[in-house]
Image (cartoon, rainbow, N blue to C red; front, side, top):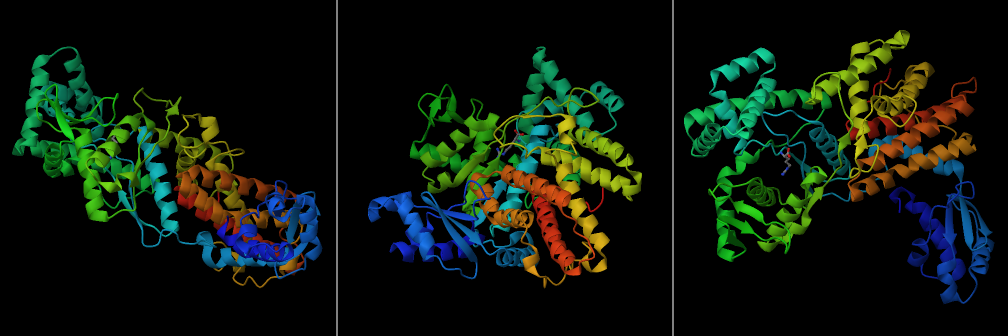
Length: 577
Ligand code: ARG
C-alpha cells in the first residue's frame, strides 16, 4: 500500500470495520484502488468478509454505504454490487499532497525503510585498456539510478567500481607494448591514448590466435612478472591503468556518475590466500584436472579457484571482494549490476560463498540486465561509448537549432538532452529485456523518451517563469506560499493529476523492491502525458488570481516530481530546450 495514502485507508477501514463489526486491520488490508478511477478514489471489495458474516457481499457493501458519514478526508461512499466505492474530499486531498510535495520534494510521504542499513552496489566496472562499451553504460546508469533510489529510501550506499584491471590479458598487452613497430603503428592510427592501448591489445590477441607461440609465452611471463612485483612490469601496468582511468573519468563526468571506491580486481591480489586456504581446509574445494575448484552444483562446470598454473581467476577475485565488502561495510545487501551473460558466474559465486559457510551469501544479488541490440554509430565497428554520446549530442543540437529562439544555451542544452536521451533509453523496459537501439526512439520528442519528460519539465518551468518572479522555478521559493484555495482544484483533471502525484511514494517502493528504475521512468512518462493533456484542457494563467495561484501550485508540484525523478535516473532536467 502507498504509505502516503495510509490516513485515507485508515478512515475507510474505521468506518467499514464499525459497520460490519470486523477487526480494523483485516478491513484495512482489503482496501484497494478501483480498476476505474472514475468510479471512486478507493474501493472496498466485500467478498472476503462474506463467509464470516454469512451474508452476500452485495448486502455487506450496502451496509457499509448506509452507515457512511463524511469525515475530514472522506466525502462519500457508494455500494456498487459487491464493492463500496469511496470518494475523497478533493480539496483536502489536494492540499495534503501538494503541501507535502512542496515541503519535502521527491521524498514526500516517504518512509525511510533503509535507515541504519547499508547497501553495496557494484556497477560500471569496466576493463582497463578496453573500450567502455554499451554494456558498461547500462551497468553504469542502472547502478547509479538504483543507488540514488535506495539513498532516497534512507539506505547508506557504498558505490563500488570493480575495475577489470588484473588477469593474463594484461600480459598480452605488455608483450605487445614491447614491439616498437606495433606501438608506432598504433600511435599513427589513433590519437587517443586509450585507443592506442586497445589497438595494441587487439594486435596481441590476433597474433596469439594466428599461432605465434612466442607471444603467448612472453605474455605469460610478463603477467608473472607483474604478479611477482617486478618494477618494470608494475610501472607499465600502472601507466595503462592511469590512461584508462582518465578516460573513464571523462565519461563519468559527462554522465554525472560517481563512486565511493574504485577498487579493481588487482586490489584483491593479496587478499585471496586466506580464502583459498579456508576452501582447502574445509574440504569445500578439491583438485580437478590439475586445477583447484569448487563444485557449486551437480551438473554445471565448477568454479575455478586456482588454475593449473596456480594463477587465480576472475571468480577467485570476486570471492575475495565479496568477503572484503562484508567485513568492511557490514552490508544488508550486496548488489552486482552486471549483464545477464554473467549469470552463471554469479550463481557459482553465491553458491561458493554459501558452501564456505558465509550466511550472508543470501544477501548478495546479481542485478542482471539484457543487451542493447542494433547499435551502430557513423564511425567504425568497435563501438566507443563517447561516440554514441557525441552523436546523441550532435543530433540533439540539430533539433535545438530548429528552435533557435527557444534556446539560449544551445551547447549546454544539446549536451543535457542528448546524454539524457541515451541514459533514459536504458529504462524503457524492465532491465532483463534486450533493448533495440534506434536513434529515432532515443530522441523521440513526442513519445516514450528522455527528451519527452525533459520537455514536460521545460513546460512547467515556462509556465512558472511566465507567471512572474514569485513563482520562478529558479528559486526554491516557487509558489512560496501554498496558501491557496484548494477547492479550486476539484475538476476531474485536477483530481487525476493529484492522484498520480500521490502515487509517487509507492512507485519508489516498488522500484526498489524490484530493482527496477524502469518503474520510475514509466511513472515519469505517465505524469508527463497527463500533464500535457491537462494543459490541453485548462489554462493555468488567467485573470482569476485565486485560480491561477492554485493551478500554479499544481504545476510546480509536477515540476518538482519531474525534476527530482529525472535526477534520480541520472538525467538532467533543463529548464529550457
Ligand atoms: N569487469 C567485468 C566485465 O566487464 C564486470 C565486473 C562486474 N563486477 C564484478 N564484481 N564481477 O565484464
